[in-house]
Amino acid sequence: MDMGMGNGLPPLIERAVEAATRAPSAYNTQPWRFLIDGDRIDVVLDRARVLGVADPDAREARLSCGAAVFNLCVSLRANGRRAPVRLLPDRLQPDLLAAITIEGEHEPSAADHALGKAVPRRHTNRRPFFERAVPAHARRELDKAAAASGARLALIEASARYDAIAVLTRRAEHIQATDERFQAETEYWTGRPAGHTDGVPAHAAGPPPDPDGALRLRPFRGGETLPARPYEQQPLLAALLTTAPGPRAEIQAGMALQHVLLTATTLGLAASFLSQPLEVPATCRAVADLFRAEGTVHALLRIGYGHPAAPIPRRPVAEVVTVRDNTRR
Image 1 (cartoon, rainbow, N blue to C red):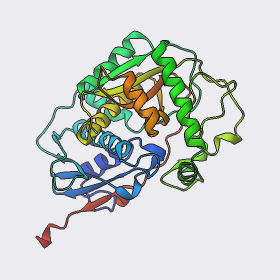
Image 2: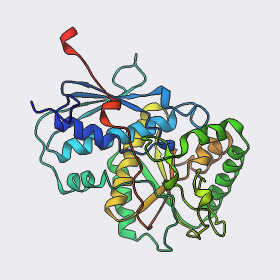
Image 3: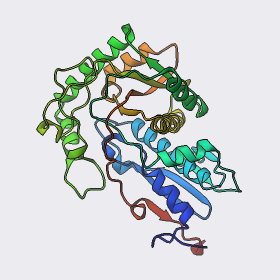
Image 4: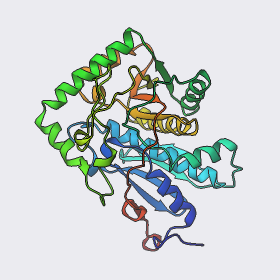
């Protein structure tokens, strides 16, 4: 069997894990590990990389790992292999989030190829978007992507609910800005110099808004040195929902989230997260109340058209992979 780039991995698996590492995560913490056992790839939550203040229950981390699972499967399908997934396959190991088994041949569809090509191009865009509406056909494709992965995408335009989300985002931002523990956590993971393979580098921060718009995007260290720029006044918002709460739903939601984000990339759309109101208990409960009749909210997105930005670094495959030694069995 051909091996990969010095990692002792078959190229097919190495490409799949590399694609998995391109998933989004809060502050680019990359809270995952991959255990390779023959044709099985386990995705494991890395507790050491869970944000203790912003994400004490590891909800966002499981969402990110779900996105990594989706990327991994997209890569395998695009390379002609079936890749069935089992979520939470061992109740005695709650941090074993998914098991993917590489099986027989698969004839890649046009969608498989398109999503596979989008994986390295997708990135969170924290910069201003154009004042250009997202057309109906693109909205339908985003809806279909969420539904195909077991979730629902609620698109939100000017309305009382839109205004309520904007208010809750600002409230959460204020609470976090006055929380010394949160600020220390943010300081640790952002504004990183060149050469780091995790965290958010200074160049990826968006500039300050001028004037301040209806939605408050999270400021990142490094952005304050940039000249202020006008942001779009009322970007399209999207809430990703599932019918049930809990860890399994969070992983499933992460898979659906990545399906939506990759689909957006194929459509020329940019996206960023409004994470603040889901990280503060009081505002998280208020957001849940806004969508109570529709399901559990797992993520809030800002979607639109913007100038492309460079993807931020990821850890190399060798850092996130463990290969089981079957000779010791």
